[in-house]
Image (tube, rainbow, N blue to C red; front, top):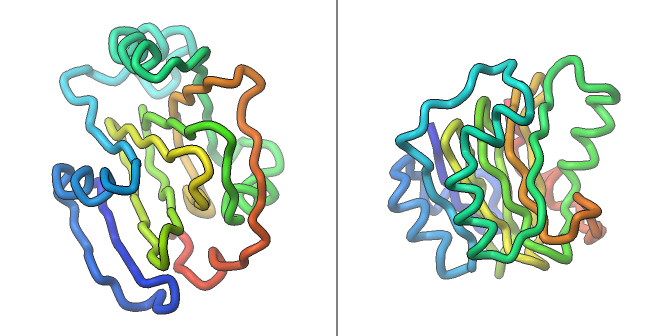
Length: 180
């Protein structure tokens, strides 16, 4: 189930908002330029579907999104127990960073938390199957799918070189709960 939990950045144990209502999640995030929506109405492909089959399943949604945002490419990423260097990869994602383009993810299977650090607040967005999130350019954030992730996601890029992080040097992610 999708969930948004908001904290003050100096009080990681005290939530100021906790909701699993997708409309409330979208409405709360929108003023910060964060896009959150559900792509309901499409049966997800099998977990082990080829990347081409996954892309084809969501092609109408992707074409509309890419036309709207000017994105240039989309691919499929799988993160699970068989992912090489999983511990190092998790550490890399769980370190606060920014990007020079929007970070757009659609969750085909599994779940993970995008945690955004904005204006003295931390927005932890647990995304699950059917959720799309777009983190705006320059927004400090980190991502955590837990110690035993099992995620299949679409990634959408404007810059075709792919995912490039610019680390902030802030250890804030260490003060907030990691995904279980």
